[in-house]
Length: 333
Image (tube, rainbow, N blue to C red; front, side):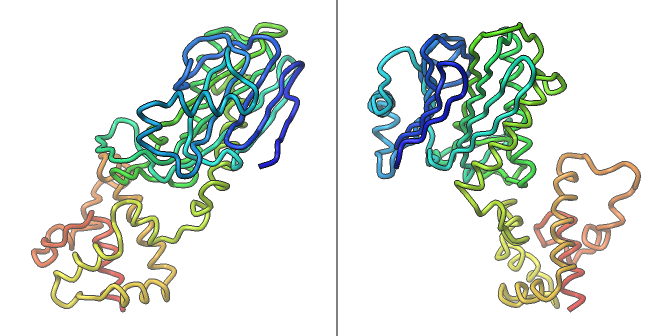
């Protein structure tokens, strides 16, 4: 991979070389973040995002991550005064987004993969670690320490918003994903100029951080995993742990509604309204499961009454709205 290099600010460069993306400065940078190496509140001269090379032993990485970190840092001439994040995403699939204001300039560099998305707060049985979203927020300006913390939170919110835009689901439960289990965010500043004290989403600095982060994560995710822009309704049902095979197995328990996988797929291909109904139904089931059904219609049970109260449908183990939609689709064919 050819060397890429950009000037971010006075004495500060962004370098991409092989499996390393690095922000390098001749003078110390103030940082705060969750990097695996030298994270926290530090002063460093380089911030690295290191990609795990193809074929690199997962066991070796977790037993001794510093071997990969130090050897990768050496590729860009760094041996000390640095922090490092590690990702399974390809570094060449990075995105860099910039916004300028009167008193500062914001750059956000992101790499992203979310094949193993998660929803913070859920139970997870983790067997393998895949997909990581790493974000570097570079501020050529002088944010206060609390402003940098607020900017880190704002960037994290923007990351989750980008995943919501794609309707990314948790690999573990099918719930709406908020990130992946190994994500990291680092906020970096040059500490030059007028002090900035606010970094939340509604502040002037926070608005730029949020915009740049959301766009950078979106672009990086599409480069790494283009599938997010090309999924079918059946793909989205599968991500919610409702694969077509499960729909067929459950609905076929009802006499007169038995259908094969191939037949149901054909029904749906010929009926875009049926596909729309299924997608709308699973979104309603999301709210149903969290007791968040809209209150302007008091008795949502009437929508699914035929499936909830009719004994012949009782054995169908599907969420109520998708069950009702699926019955109507098959009965209508």
